[in-house]
Image (cartoon, rainbow, N blue to C red; front, top):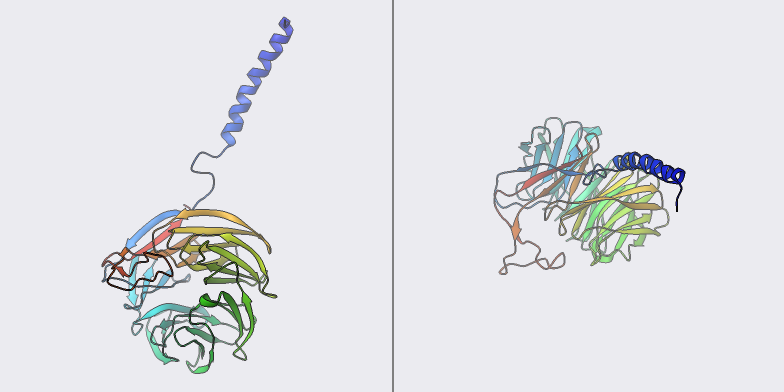
Length: 361
């Protein structure tokens, strides 16, 4: 049987424990606010006929989002006013706009194997350059000053001098599905080959392939970006079990893989925050991976977006992510790209193309 003194000590401990428990509880994050997650800030639908699109790129100096809208051409969208500024003249069939701010230039990647050069400041067309029979995507290689264009149907890539607009060289690649590319700041370009499950390194000086690296167990590599500081290549794959693969850019060795959503097309690395962003259209999610070291990666956050939001651009100044999507369907009378998904849309509805802004505030 407890003494009166023991009972008083017990009551005293309980009185002290109650406010301490309340204090500790107050330090816990409230449900739904555990971290500054991205969320949908705005969704702006652009009027127009049934859309088709591919890559989006962002000009931070002018707050312009360039959207490769294929049939319509390159649409310029102001992310501050949420309005279309213009469509670049002569860019019909464009999949992407490559931006070179140091030259005040942009270059469309047109499906017919041409590029339309335009001024970033005036958005006026300067000239039209032909380099092949088809084109899918591309990037700018700053060391040699060359534009790099991929031509999957032709199994080729092309190099064009950005200042003169002259074709410098074309070279063959064994791939018929040449996807995203990124320069390494030393005159090389890394390129994803979706149908061959590999990344190739191309020397932009000699226009030759200098390395072929398997991405296995990452199959169907599509999105790609590069971390020059740690020499790491980030590859988004459309495998049955989709992953982000991290490769050592010096050796090609697989560092690690992390799960992402199905239907990846866009991968962007943010040097300032050491995060990798992946847009995944089939699962309709944005998966963000945190890099804590050259070989250390973990999930930072994943949020739902909209179906078919598969490409993205990053606004580092505002900490925003821009994606685009549209409402579509599957017409059984038309060919369906079942390699992406059993019911991958083969048409889109008019007046449904939407610019999505995801932000933390």
